[in-house]
Image (cartoon, rainbow, N blue to C red; front, side, top):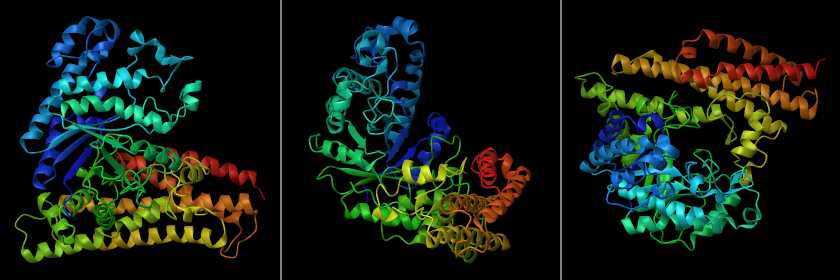
Length: 569
């Protein structure tokens, strides 16, 4: 297979999902680039549509929404007042799904389960154990999930299906939640059995309505993924699996997800982040064409038939790859997803022309020069961003932002977003041995040097872009210079602080000074950098000002000053 059959765009911005003009913008892109599925991702989105009626004194059955609603209209106002908005949100989605269907685009909702409204406690108080919601109560898979999804397909009969995940603690309730129930049943329940119960509880309404149930493997730990894989054996074969291209989350430095290709004959999709939650949000270009091509090729070789390209992130509202040069990543997915042999120039030419970035009436010679120039400047950006926000392949930033203290990078890289959990070669990625510490410092120096070189080349001339498009690129490459410099300084503070803590104030052979002196100098430079940020125009532009977070640096510097005082001369 060379062509991915399902080629989906995912919208994860809770604001834009509910903006019809924004969604039409995405549909236009999809029509122009032959993408055929739209995924609306918002935790709790299904609960913004369904009630379910049977937990408000009615029945979860009927020919349409209003046959459900008329049973419980009074109960809604008495026990679940906000649910009176559900019919209106349903009407919006009905319109969007109909418009998508007219152009051959299937619409899916993406949710995290378990998600629910607290009014169900009125009819089922037994789901609380010692004041805590209990995930192992059979109510969830025997009553709640069947009622919820039966209602969904009554309300949205044109919906193609639902993408969901049970393994993440980001849901309201899961067997993996860090604040889950402490009852004996929860302590002894096999997580694989829990996963099977949840999926089977959802499956009936999907099978009856002829809709696709797509289960994600969004799981934090390798052990949890193994439990999830164990649950797959006994699940209906027509359930689709959607696997992040890398384990745990969208980290381009991580290995391929080990589950890909190991699910038997079951249909598989893979997920990819075209926007950049962990590589700069598009505020700095980070063009992933090489990585995308490799990941899609890996999927083809492992019998993957579909992909979902995420275009934004829930944590940062009102921005997406549609607003940044990272839209190149989505063009790459659309083109390479159909034809793995496509010339890279096709990606850039389509981006420049369809987005109307080049001057009107541009000559063929100038257009060719513009395409070549764009590729020469944008293709290297991922490696520069990687050297800026990752360290030895580990996730080293806080969702692309600065750290708030010196201990946070270690926790992020080794615990929360642990590469060594998935790749044995990363066991000592943050080790303070001379060779490794020098490698980390050199990595940051190189990122700064390359960011400056790219900016200088870009600022030297405009090969044919419209003035506004060119000015936008100049601003973003200027941002990259400042961004790389900030991470170099915070990383220096981190390294010199750890050397001082772990090895004392003795000069390692690779350094030209004592760790405490170097720490003091790096803190001084970081304070000067922080002062420059206050005067920078980026400090007043959202979301660039979030990535350059001055308040975060204030906290980081306070911690660094404490380290210096603790190791006074």
